Length: 127
Image: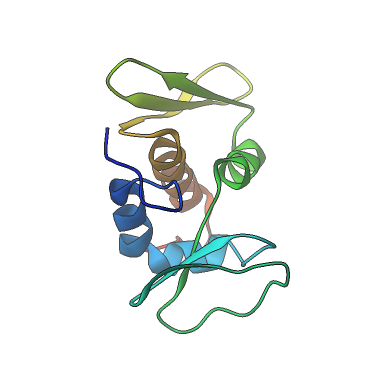
């Protein structure tokens, strides 16, 4: 696993957020106490949500990712293994929609959400 940044997020999760900035801007708006990633680093939104700058992206918390995933899948499972974490999502028939493995729960959930959002979006969500 990656070493966590001072805000508790792994460097791989922050990199994933940076890579998918446009998709995250569609899926999330800053909420109270969210972290925001900018070219200058990571900052906390604080008690009053604000609009994002052009180069900023919300760093979603795990609970926010799970809420979004539950809107797209009937069942969502986070499976913590000794070396990595899996996020699985299933439809109402028990068929697997996504099965993603990452270094941390947030990274696995974000990758699963991006895959499901791209499948269900019209027009499709792009990176």
